[in-house]
Image (tube, rainbow, N blue to C red; front, side, top):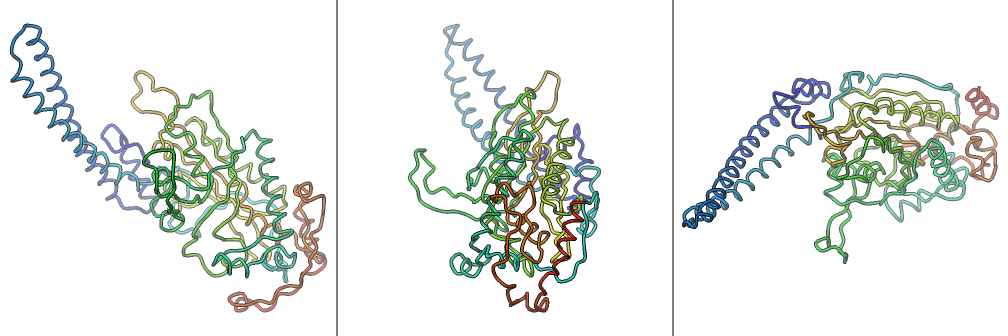
Length: 472
């Protein structure tokens, strides 16, 4: 959430207006905050005046009592005022809530370097790595996963519904290898490993997730339970979509000293997403599913250090996928596609030779103090003469969403014998260099059958040459 002082005369409302314009959002949202804040200030002024009047009455009552004089009239007046003050307090709180309701939907201030557009086709390519071969006859990840006997989608759907799956054999081994390698990779860079809760309380989730996420992305969990804390029975919980959500609240309502920063966490969790609205080839295999594992970078920094940290976190993700031999490009996401919390976001899009296209593997965002302000994670103590409270800056970046990582490894590692195992993963897979095919290519069906003819087996030398280019 933005600082409401930005909307006041002493703030910088034009900065907010320009940011909203870049996001393609209405200026009316800014005006609504200014109007609601003016009403709150009037309510606060009335409450302060009433408190001052009560203080005067208390002084006069004290003088009367010390002088052994009758103070009944003043006491009655004070008691009447006390009732009025309680009413003013309730009104002031309602006005404050009204401000927050119109303030919360306004997105973070867009960084000046973000490309301005509402069309993601205008995402700015800032760098590339590796080669992007146009080899004919390569297979898609879901076909390759079937050929190594790595998953069972039919039984998964039968048991758990749409987009469900069982990982089996080498599919499960690859999943665990990516998790373990990812955590080890970040540990060497000074990150503290953290496994998070899989669900969060509604009010805490509301501090870190956008309102539309509750309907479009998050699963609600409702159940009766006996708790040790009074009043917590039957409360609603939400399954997490990423470990970013619970980690962002890890230091909720805490004051962090600058000398403690940065705090770097390697979050590991299962993630749950509705994936509402996605369709077509995104339903193939395990690229876009309702449940998956992810290793996440989450960092808290001092405000002045967050933009350098943003680049460092992106570099970490790049180094990780380079070590797996996955060619990629990095794009800066256009202003109109940023989520509310992000001031700037990079996506790392891996090259999928079976699909012959780039697909998102990493999302890396600097949320500045947007999340920390609502969560109350302060940075240092406000010094004399400082007008604004300081909050830590929060940044998040995927290291690897394991199902997508498996997809990229399969498509880029395919050869005639099976799947070439990236050198970085071999210690986690018993030292094997090839995952052999044990099944023939599956027959296409449904949308896959309409999209393409029966796939050809990969040429014996094509993927080998491709991987050689990646290592060059």
